Image (cartoon, rainbow, N blue to C red; front, side, top):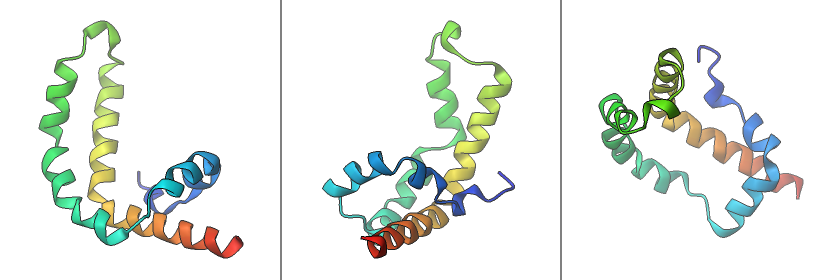
Length: 99
């Protein structure tokens, strides 16, 4: 997480075929996505995720360490939604220039 991976477009590039299908039906709008930011921040909290995890059968759960790492990572990503939106926008604009 210290690598600031939210600035990386590598995931989108490696999964280009999948993202192409997604974005051919959806017009990306950073402004619309950022309008949803407060909803994400309100709904996706540590408490809400822990409540979901509590409902999962113990046999299905990964180790406690993996759960804690996952929670930390998701909260980290939520805290960088602005940066992620900028990265998506930049990557999509770069791709448009190629075609």
